[in-house]
Length: 178
Length: 124
Image 1 (cartoon, each protein chain N blue to C red):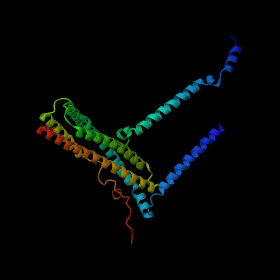
Image 2: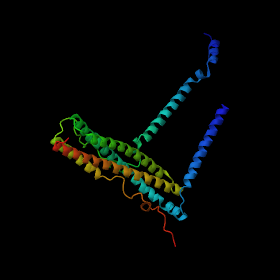
Image 3: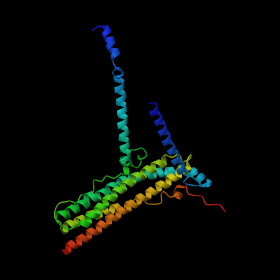
Image 4: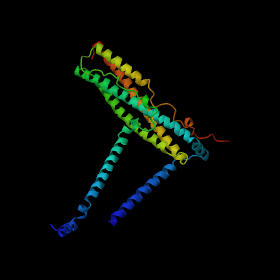
């Protein structure tokens, strides 16, 4: 029993030490001037209010955009691919683009989860007490939002590619060269 | 069955049997706490929490969430002809237009200067 207790305390001490080291190294990763820190401390409450509003509006945007993206695949692209296959036409390009689109939709979902968690962390930081941590958290969240923006652009690009392939299919169908 | 017999039998009971009701309550509480922790973990990590607009902070924007029932489905059965291709094109263009006209997490809203946390100019 004593040995078990000792093992437990040693493990807990190791975990704590690792966490403290990680925290220290992260805190030291950004060097800000005293003026900058002072400005962050002065404006951070307003910044957090702005971020809070952005957090809420992004939540709604995600709720509205997600089904739109998903429906494009499940209600339009996949049914057309099935119909083409059932009629024994060649629609491999369309099917491949749909697969790629579905894969990127998964990436988009995952990116949003990461972004939302990061934003929630930023909003929970006491910025008056920890201005540097707040600033770093804002930078991390900003990167995640940028990634999310890129993901949505990729999805739109894939939708445009699907449309181009569809028009190509349509043209060849009319010409009778399928 | 005498009183002495009952007394002896009571003493013979193990610790487990003696406190079995308390152990049962303790186990029930432990299991329920584990299940609640598991469900909260799943809620947070499955993406459900991020889409949950009933959370605090979303009250004002909750009404802006759109219902997606107006998204019509293209039939997966039937012939491929000029008519069906035309129908698909119309449906696709309509939804594609809706997507491209929606904002997509862009803009400079998170700029340091927009948030007022940018580096102050260096005084010369």
